[in-house]
Image (cartoon, rainbow, N blue to C red; front, side, top):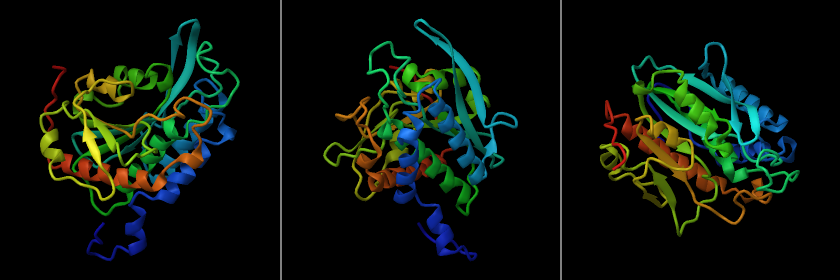
Amino acid sequence: MMLLAGGMSAAYAQDTIPDARRIQETVNYLASDKLKGRGTAEKGGRTASRFVARQFKKLGLKPANGSSYFQDFTFDRNAHKNIPSRNVAGFLDNGAAHTIVIGAHYDHLGTAGLFDGKYPIGQIHNGADDNASGVAGLLELARHYVKNAGKEPFNFLFIAFGGEELGLQGSKYYTAHPLMPLDKVHFMLNMDMIGRYNPERGIGIGGFGSAQEWPEVFKDVQQPGIKYFTDAAGKGASDHHNFYVNKVPVLFFHTGGHDDYHKPTDDAPKLQAASEAAILQLGIQLINKAMTFPALQYVGEQ
């Protein structure tokens, strides 16, 4: 990243760059046994939501829901009724007419009590890659756009979604009760499992077909050490889906499945923090280039 004229220090400039050490520390905490897998309607999930809100406040993001960072909701799943969850939303107000939404779900399986025996009940599923890695990415991108020296032509709304593992519930609730009009959203970037980069596979980026301008945005964008491929689908099994079906262009970052998916072995030491930092640099390039387009033309399912 270039130093800008006007006396910005090297330390300040460095602070805007996604940092592997910080990423690892965030994942170490969120995926620790102390939080017991961040289960929806479990104490660890609520603790994780408060952690994200504290980080948003420290970074200087405004509460997006009036005076609160939280958007509380309940939902039903099978025989389980009125399950409590919440989204956590922080707003960077650049005085713009339109907003970029960046999201990642913070919940995981917890101790699996709401999954009707699908997973071992009582065992802690820490969910380091799924999706502490995405939350770490969310906080790094928030840090970048709060602390960089420029003022972007779009606002930013950073959302950590709850209830994703139980049917994309947080984004479902948000898009039904948006904190700002969905037609004022430039696009939505979702990060889900971005911490296990495989250089042979590369990172998959979904949503490539959701806006007419994405091919031009992606043109000539490269990040050293990171290979990526695109997928046209705007729908999918993560929170971008609910934005896409509500006519918002989307992008979806995902490093792929692995043997620890939805198992108690998805632990923090397996995270590839340096690769995640580089993936976030790629994300910054794409976000910045997308901001050179005053509008993105939504493309519905073909």
